[in-house]
Length: 332
Image (cartoon, rainbow, N blue to C red):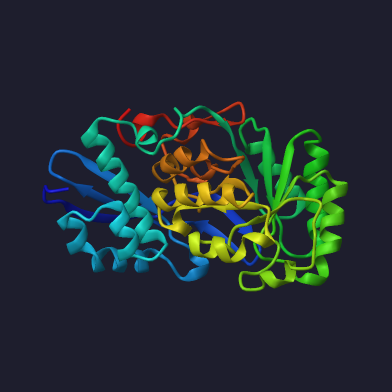
């Protein structure tokens, strides 16, 4: 890029419709930073919430944006950006803004620039919180038509068993996965998986804590195990892939669509199934993830549905699927 660029950024509160509980946390919002890069004629945008469990919050994101302002405004490209910033929210916001800027300048959709097939609607999971069964069923009734559910667990086998049984009884034929959010230790894994098998659960996400992945070394699960918190980027993918069967790629973790596409390709070569997830977020953060989703086996892009004031959210979902039109981010 030779034209001088202007970087700006702002915060969005990203309040949720209702508080949302996972193992160890209760969220009423997921604040995000929206970065824009303009050449004076067109503007690229990127939204990032960061990675809360690594201290990558809006304050940190904005400090990182300012740290590399001069290089960005001088015309840093996406590959150079990977050397300027570590994986995380700031790089994600800038990377996505550069993708949209390139798309608008070229008049070419992002999916085409990325070498991905034209986007089509995809089945997405909708996530239920780690609440008591009655509250979970109330939340289930408030969701749109769905074909796939991801249920958050709390880390207590007795309580989680009640949650899973309640959801399975209410939706006996739906695809059901669970996300433990690092809530279990090695002694509980066999009991957890036995219960999940009985309830016809098809996916177990991040059962153990980040940093304690060795607990999985001599353990085999009949249900595919997903790495989320355990694999942030390409480096951690190489280190941890043997312990998991599925890779959950989130743009906030890996630092944008550029590295996400590289991770999807590498994960496939390593024999893993590929999943795309989100750190909540509105339509703007979901649009680049939806480009990646075209390459994925499991799609978990329900973030906009839970944001209180995303005016586009309802239009994205129909019959259990998500469809993000290309013109909402980049050239249509």
